[in-house]
Amino acid sequence: MDFRLSEEQQQFTDSLRRWIERDYTFEARQKIVTTPSGVSDAAYASLVDLGALALAVPEEAGGLGGNSEDMMLVMKELGRGLVVEPYFATVLAADFLRRGGHTAVLESVASGELKLASALSEKESGHELFNIATSARKDGDQYVIQGLKCAVIHGAQAGGFVVSARTDCEQRDTDGISLFYVPRDTAGVMVTEYRTYDGQRGADVRFDNARVPASALIGTAGRGWDILEASTDYGVALLCAEAVGAMEAANALTLEYLKTRKQFGVPIGTFQVLQHRMADMFMHAEQAKSITILAAVKVLTAAPDERRKLVSAAKVRVGKAMRFIGQQAIQMHGGMGMTNEMSISHYFKRLTAIEVTLGNTDFHRSRFIRQPDFAAV
Image 1 (cartoon, one colour):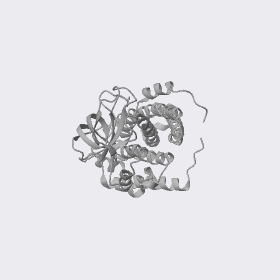
Image 2 (image 1 turned 135 degrees about the horizontal axis):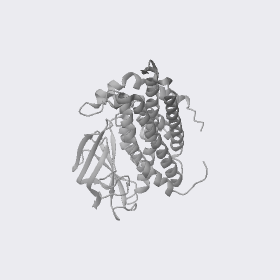
Image 3 (image 1 turned 180 degrees about the horizontal axis):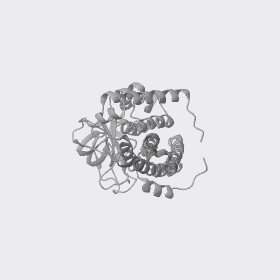
Image 4 (image 1 turned 90 degrees about the vertical axis):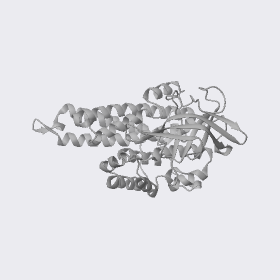
């Protein structure tokens, strides 16, 4: 696929990369990860100043109205820099709100005043986001939400949540699902934070008879599955882009190590078997990049069946590449590659986390198989 960046896209990408290389080094990231909050307000403010948050918001809501290809470029650079700020969590939730027409909230997202999170997973749901036990009961002009959401990415940093709840039908039905915007300060919302193994932050969010107005509804009551599936597919495409950036960085680190690490008096990069492994790693990264571009280009415009198939194909191919590149990079670094002092170990941990976020490789392989064929793109 011929994917040439426009002048504006290239300038934005260069600006973001320069900021990461200058202000968000691996050493700076490590200091941020060990702080009580696990994130940096200053770093997030820099992303706002660069326009990365406004890019995810439509122009009518005070943003720049970036498309999915623009967002792919941002996520790729954040993956390259192992950025731990709540950017992905915010832009994913913002996509739900965009589809539901909550423009007032999005204005605060574009300005950086409000961070968001998506409370979708539950203890029994696994990768099946339609498996929802959390309930939302209509009470006059309000909804009363009751339930527990688990593994909410950057839930403790969020000022508001997009919440999936059941207003009708059985627990595993796609019908009867409703989506709500719930501010963090709503009575009955309790957040329990923890650090995840990839250096980021997660949280369990309990809704104990949390009351929200009917205006908090995103879309139509009981018909939220289409938005839920479309927005999470968008999220998968963004995660694939982040993974591509992380894999390219991991390849670069490994190649540099092969050039400098000596054994038997020569750089280990001169050994043919390691050259072959390195070539395979680059091939995996290029294949993952190509299918990620295709998914990003189509994720917001393709028909649902085509979108599902392209997104799942990308997650499967990227998942295979992440596993291969991560394992090979660690092995070629030797024992040091497993230590916290080496950045390569953190790339592998982040890639491992991406693989299980919004559906792992096995889940998306099965989903791909279930989808009908569509005309060649």
